[in-house]
Length: 86
Image 1 (cartoon, one colour):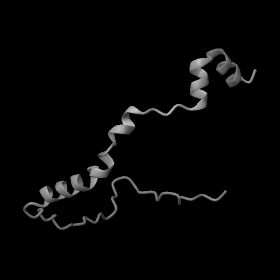
Image 2 (cartoon, rainbow, N blue to C red):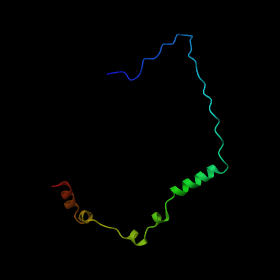
Image 3 (cartoon, rainbow, N blue to C red):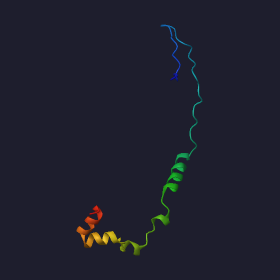
Image 4 (tube, rainbow, N blue to C red):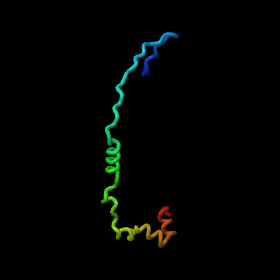
């Protein structure tokens, strides 16, 4: 299997390669109010919509019971036997 990396170059002790120091521009300061506007935009988009918060009051009191739930409540041993496949 071929090697992916090349063998490193040998550097003699006391001899250093030429180093290039890169100069970068200093970052500009943010405009006045930038962080406040950014925080407002993020909270506006992350907040749930009023439609998502709405839950009808009638559905909170009504519970839906499946036939398996009814069987488990009325006949627990029969439910366990049916669940285990006995």
